[in-house]
Amino acid sequence: MLEVLDVGRNQINDSFPSLLGSLPKLQVLVLGHNKFHGSVLYQKYDLGFRFLRIIDLSHNLHTGCLPSRYFQNWHAMKVSKEEQSGSYNTLITFYFKLGVDYVISTQNFEYSITITNKGSEIIYPKILKVFRVIDLSSNNFTGRIPDGIGDLKGLQALNLSNNNLEGRIPPSLSNITELESLDLSLNKLSGEIPPALSQLTTLEVFNISFNDHLVGPIPQGNQFNTFDDTSFQGNPGLCGSLIYQKCRNEDVIPLSPPSVHSDKSEDEDSELIDWIIKSLGCICGTIVGFVIGKIYITDKYHEWFMETFGRRRTMRRK
Image (cartoon, rainbow, N blue to C red):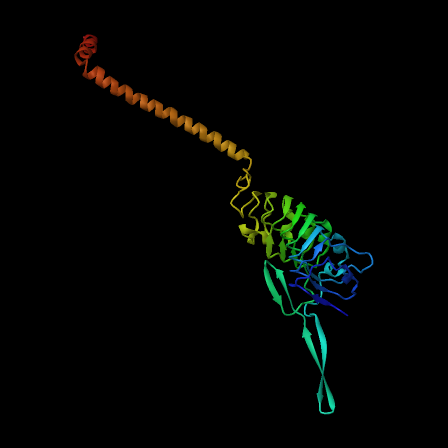
């Protein structure tokens, strides 16, 4: 039974092959870098890719809304804990003729694929069964990102970049607790970044650049403190410590209310200051008075002073 189908990087010009959803064991579907077009429609007669773990539809010409009905049906992506040592493989039997006898040799071959993860194209020589990826980037998908995508708790990588998606970033993405890479760049998303995304402690790559309509503060804490400004560029409405645009209330330090003790100390200080000022005033006045008396009275009018006060003092002695 077919488990892996990789026809990426060809020139296939067709609509989405929904008939493949009837394959009961298909787990890896790579159709990227082709010319598939039209909407990704859910067909009632198929199984809806129930066991799909990896899907790559990137770099095609798909239109319409994201396949939310398929998201609901991808049960294998909803499981977050599995044995990580297993990988997909197949057994191929070779028959060799040696004289009149045949020798049978069985070889175990591992599947390998090339997909975009964490911003780079990576060749996976082995596909771990725990590995779960959705790459719908570089198409013409429109509409909103459905909240139901948060039910896919087993995802490690989600790439919806370079489409025409609108609306808010769904807070339900914070439910994907094992998410390592989230790329929503080059869309038309609006609103604030959900603070709940800071709870994704496994997130290594986060890119929401060039959405233009995102606003508000960038969440802080956990993995968000490790991202640089390139993850948020092209969004003039964003602010925060990770980019040049700071939030208005970010540097405001709340002041604690004054205590009763501080009030008393302030009153005592003010009284002391008043006393010092008054004392200095008296001292200064005395000095100024002495100087003026010395210059203008005892020096300049010395004779008049002596005649007036000197004579009175002589008369009193007599």
